[in-house]
Length: 163
Image (cartoon, rainbow, N blue to C red):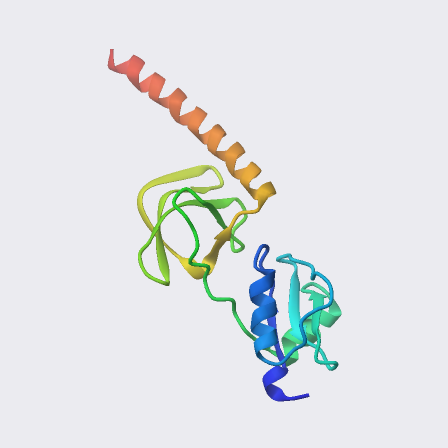
């Protein structure tokens, strides 16, 4: 196998076509069927010059990661204001996209991290975030509702004390 084909890409939900395009650009044959479009998989060029898929948390995945070079997906610069983003580094961390600052950073309207909500200009790395999937959006909305309710209750107490 050629060295240039000993590569893998960690999957990102919703970005399957980008992964296929990158690996096909290195000479792999396009897959005959859909691949598993998920964060839990890695994609590589196998010895038959096809795009292979392996679970990241499997023995095959570990062998590939130990012996092949990782290609990182470039940041997706297609986010729109109001998109809900999340990071794989911290569970329960969400940002609401405002605008790009440059290719490497973006501004968020606010950030929710577990039981905290941060407002104001928040600069974050585009490489660390991705669009939230539907289940993650549901978690975001539950966290947002709970935090907003707590903020309204605290505001009511402060207003009552100010009287």
